[in-house]
Length: 110
Image (cartoon, rainbow, N blue to C red):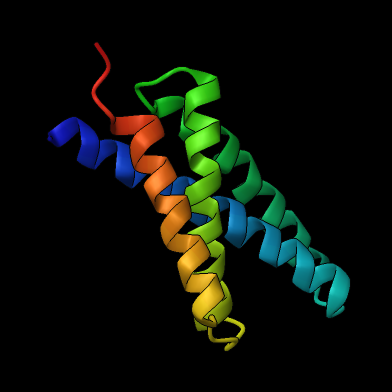
């Protein structure tokens, strides 16, 4: 159970790094923010590249499952940061994505 909790933490951290770093670059390009936003975003995106290596599974499995985590975190980011609430289809899709994560990463294999 501790391994699963660590794995979920790494997924969350990776998601925050990818979305947060991308958002900083977005602000720089789309909203004319300072170049410091771009540099900070680049640093955070490099951290995103490192965090998934801490996962216990192999690359393909980790990145496939991370896709589902990214979907849900993106919906939550849009809701909380951009103030765009998800509709029911966003929520249904996010739930389906999380089910995929659970199957890919944590389903017992014989």
